[in-house]
Amino acid sequence: AIQMTQSPSSLSASVGDRVTITCRASQGIRNDLGWYQQKPGKAPKLLIYAAATLQNGVPSRFSGSGSGTDFTLTISSLQPEDFATYYCLQDNNYPWTFGQGTKVQIK
Amino acid sequence: QVQLVQSGAEVRKPGASVKVSCKASGYDFTNYDINWVRQATGQGLEWMGWVSPNSGYTGHAQRFQGRVTITRNTSISTVYMELNSLRSEDTAVYYCARGRWLLDWGQGTLVTVSS
Image (cartoon, rainbow over all chains, first blue to last red):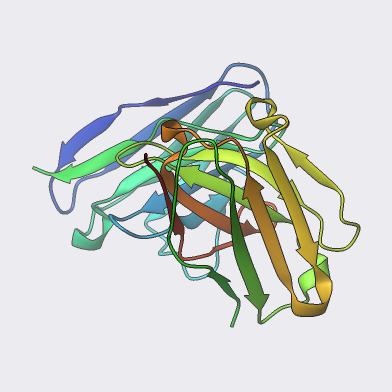
């Protein structure tokens, strides 16, 4: 199975900060990567698919980049509602696999 | 609007089985695969498997081989995930999610395995 290594596992940031989360795949996955946001007690929500395409309704402060093995999720200016846990998911190959998650906390 | 509504919480003893349902509405049920993802308390997300509502074809992660069955009933736009030989480590919230990229998610079903 393809392993997805996500970093950092947690970070502390302030409102207005630029935040970057990375995911590295154990083998090339083209651009078959999605990013999800999960708040406590809620189901995850799709933010970005195909590595860089913003899902409908997701604020433009979220962006994704990368291809092959290295991917990045960037929040350009962190807002109060963005404090959550973020996951990457590869769907290039079965079994689909998630990164371990990054918890974004208030500094 | 798209909705995936899952069945309610379940409690089972070790060795038992559980069947969770996911009823879809607001889109053409046969056009999107349904995936199952689970999350143990305080842990990350784990993809379990999928079903094509159109063909009935399924697939699942190897670690669930022999224990998971995913089916669908197109007449009522509902997908089912059955997990057998439950153990305490299967205690988790189970989610169904629509399509590639997991576009929409059910609300989750807590399955507790405890003696």
